[in-house]
Image 1: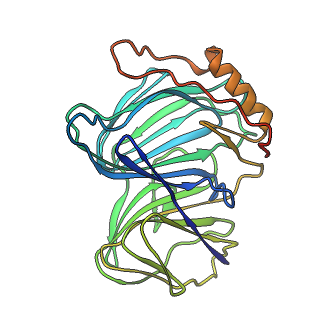
Image 2 (image 1 turned 135 degrees about the horizontal axis):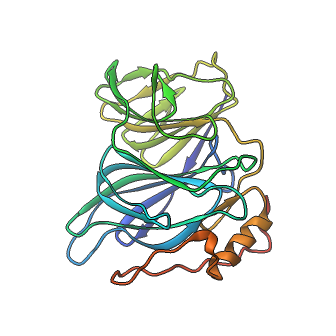
Amino acid sequence: MSVQKYDAITKDVGGIPVARLLPQGKRRTVGAWCFLDHAGPAEFFDDNKGLQVGLHPHINLQTFTWMLSGEVWHQDSLGFRQLIRPKQVNLMTAGTGNHTGISHTEQTPDGVKDLHAVQLWIALPTNQDIKPNFEHYPELPTWHKDGVDYVLTTGSYHGHTAPTTQYSPLVGVDMQFGGAGEFVIDKQDGFEYGFLVLKGTLKVNGQSYTQDELVVLSDCTADDNAVLWADAGTHLMLLGGEPLPHPTVIWWNFVADNVDDLRTAVKDWNDGHERFGDINLDGTQLRRLVAPEVPEGLKA
């Protein structure tokens, strides 16, 4: 088993600190998880309206929003409009292939003055015929064991199974530690695992990791025995999964297994192709975003 650390690239987005952990130049994915943003915690004051993301498209991926505090409105081209609250998951599936896609907006509701969330993308297996969809999960498996509070956002863990739709083997677990001490994780052969440190301190084999650092355990087997330790009050997001059997190439809001499909998606979106649907933005402050052209040097 190998252990690697990845530091976040943090930017201020409308007063919200957003720490991006995936993708990076040296690591694009953990299993099929291909995008990882830690947004917030942030408080909004005066005229700051919080998160206001205009209409934008996706292909060959699922957006997976894990809400920690605050609220966000999701609205998409399939006609779904859903408010997500803390300890809930929104899962939007863009579908696979060059004839499907989806578009959506995200907005903080009026009067909401804070936001804290983990925003993830899951790359879809492009050898499957997957249709666009949206699902909201207001209740997820929760339990307490050995001083740790768990919420299972997807997959199976400790004998629990989340209802969240999957197209490749994955797991996502929110872990909050009431006291300091060693712990172990349920491992599956063939999985890669990543710990996002949301708060506190994680130690792996004696090495310390803190907020907005991603620790990736790869080449794992069920018999590997990494020594894991967390400080009291530590909050982690554990992500794991099997790598997909094809490349994962990302440009802007698109995922594909080759660069040509990304170029097709950029052209289709900017030309207003019906594959992405539409949302009426009249009466809102949102706008339809323009897709930037794929650079010549981008490679699979």
